[in-house]
Structures are given as structure tokens and as C-alpha cells.
Amino acid sequence: MTQGTTFWRSIEAIHDVVYFAPDAKQRYEAIGLKGYWMGYMASRSAAVGTPPPELVVALFQGFAPRVVERALPDAWSMASRDDILGARYELARAALATALSGADAAHLAAELAAITRGIDFAGKPLAAAHQSLPEPADDAGRLWHAATVIREYRGDCHVAVLTSAGLDGAAANALAVAAGLAGEQQRSMRGWTEDEWAAATSRLVTRGWVDPDGAITETGRSARQQIEDATDRVCAAGLDREATGRTITIEEPLLGLARAVEASGAVSYPNPTGVRRP
Image (cartoon, rainbow, N blue to C red; front, side):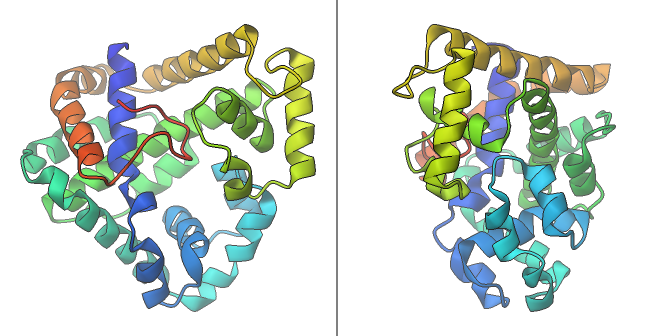
């Protein structure tokens, strides 16, 4: 595993705790939203404001438009943006509590916040929106906030690489399943119909990336790795020298926290994000 890969996967694990928290659905329902997916769509996109579903489909990629449309714009009339963001941060704090018990949260938060100040946000709208949010006053909140900015930065880069490779949301998910990065439930969780999934798989077969049974080929495995490598290069290009240096020096303690997150049960692998364990 390369140094950069370890950093990005560790960031992903820390950020992801809000998606797998067992009480996520209940916390969002407590402020007026309906169900887990409305909470997910609203809380992740609220950094942008109160965006329409078309914008969120474009920002998130991966999700069938109908899934987003079931949640938005209705969510914005059911709960305030501030309450939605507040619930998300509280989820993060609670989910990270066990993992942070043996970590220097203040140091990690300061280092990650410094990295965010060295990012070129051009072409990275979701990351820029999160960076614009007020920084929490507490160490756990600051740490998760900075990790989220960095995670969405890589996510914006990844979407750009996926689309430049000609992969739409369904095909990108089908390739992740074929590569063993996500489970068979990925189709239904992302909202794609069986016909849409079959069509996406057919497109991958035409490219030689999966076989007719949906199993990944060596060509597909190589292509998938090239996409990850290209994403890393695009991410690296947007970090200034100081930020790049900090990603190296913070890697070891960040990896320790990411593994503590997994050990606490806050995140398990494989999971729908399609990211391998750090």
C-alpha cells in the first residue's frame, strides 16, 4: 500500500462513521426528517445550502436520481438546515468517542485543519462547501469536520475521474461490486433497478472489464486500479507543499485512529462506500 493510499483510506474511515451509526435514522427523525436516506441526502448536501435534487445527483454521483428525489427537496421543509447539520455532527462525535479515547484528538484536528487550508478547491464543489462551514469548537468536532472536507475533496476528484473514464453512476457501482469492494446489495442501496443494473453491466462487458456473468476481468481490475491511481494524482495536484508534507507526517497516527474506528465497530468492511480498509 502506498503512503498516499493509507492516508486517504484512513480519512474515509473517520468520515464514514456518520453513515453506519446505529442511531442515524432515529437522530434524523427526531428533528423531523423521514427515515435514514432522507437524513443521508439532506445532511451530506446541507453544506451546499438547500440544494435541489438535480444538483445533489450531480455532486454525489453513484445514486439513482429517484433515490435523491424521494428525499429532496422535501427534507428542507421538514427540518432546518442548522438542525440537520447539528444532528450530523452529533452523530460523528458519538460514533468517534470510543476510537478517540486513546488518541490525541487536538493534535489530529489541528493537523487535518491545516491540510484543508492547503487545498485548491477549484472544481471540488462539495469539499469547498464543507470547508465553508463554521469549524466546531471541540476537538472531536473539529477533527471530523476537517476529515470530512478532505474526504469530500477526494470524492470530488474521484467523480471527475470516473466521468472522464466514461462511467456513469450505475456502471461505477457495478464495477465496484465486481471488484469485491461492495456487496451484492449495492444495486438496491443505490436505487438502481435490475434493468438499469443489467444495462450497466452490459456496458462493462462491452469494454471487457467484466465477463458476461459479471465477474471482473484482469482488464477490468487494471482499469479500476488506474482509476484509483488517477484519483490520487488529481488529489495530490491540488495540495500545496505544506499540506502534502502534513499528509505524510500525520499518516501513522491517522492510521491508528482509523483502525481504532474499525475495532470499535463504527465502520466495517466491505461496505457501500467501496473503499478498502486502511
